[in-house]
Length: 457
Ligand code: BES
Ligand code: ZN
Image (cartoon, rainbow, N blue to C red; front, top):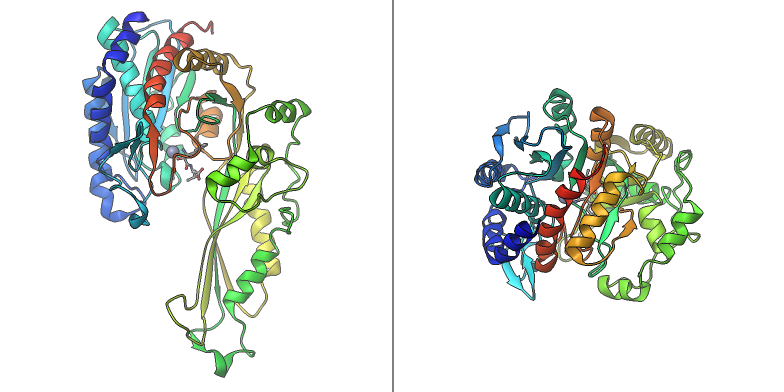
């Protein structure tokens, strides 16, 4: 391993230069005008995978964006890692809030700023470089590896479950590795053993066939903006408790051990409020902030649209109102069941004065592993070697729906090996990745393959 680590340490600057090339491609999956860039990014990844010595590299088409596949299967008898990541990124608006352009990676204070730096290009690239170091220095990997890098994660991975079902044999492995999450805090490396699930909906209300004069019609015709506000207000009480009947039925209570362990984590609520400009934290009164994010479900309004929002005033009764809403779920909540409960409730509370349309969008199941499983423990040792510190064990509030698909369709456990930081502005302006964590992450990834090779299966 020493040779591999020396190689990584000597290549530090080259890695950053190469990463800039990947970050320069605006592979925004949500915007049709970037379809060409998304394809170009897939090809960039495939070229890079060939360069580092992976075999059978190809773009596998899906009804949407292609999956980039490549493998190295020269270690018969050793375990096989299926590495999953994504090459697509989120849109960049509002552009004027970026200090430097999102697709011209710029380094400031040891951080590389660009859309996709942390989520997820930088973290995928870390594994490319770890594989390269093994293959360049030893001519082999300690494990077999299969890479599948998808291009639709940021829009809900609509074609991924079918893709996995259709390629079951090709994707056969012993464990999935994913680097698409954050560490607990700067200087506090962590291993994640749980993710929340998600159900997402759009609600459309129509109160009339056209916008109307609010003086001539107001008071006699329902205002869909107001009706929507009243409906949303019935989703959650002031204490953060969700009022959809049956919503909490399958929620696993937090164990005392877990609550005790989380209470020892170095979390400072004052600093948290300051870092994110939060006047006062909000949530269910019986739970701490970490418990609310990691271990409890939530209902959020992601966007609202209705009526006149320009400068000045306009006396109008809007014809329509729209809300995007989503629920983060925890074990053992089932997204289909929750979607049903939500739809039934929305239909029940919608007054007859408006036409209602409810559209279900993407989502996924929550996931939780036991943190003493062999792979998570192996990953913990690799993190310790890369970062010089034992990791803390955490859950996360975000979602990676494919993790439960890997479990259900391929019977595979997942290791979430993330090195982002919670303040790295994923999905927001000025996304960045700490270059120290990126570098240590390459070392830790190289170590991870060895640690997994040493796992007796
Ligand atoms: N990388 C994130 C997920 C993440 C980040 C999980 C940090 C845990 C900690 C991923 O790219 C993402 O944003 N996922 C979406 C899923 C959705 C589109 C189905 C999410 O969580 O909103
Ligand atoms: Zn991501």
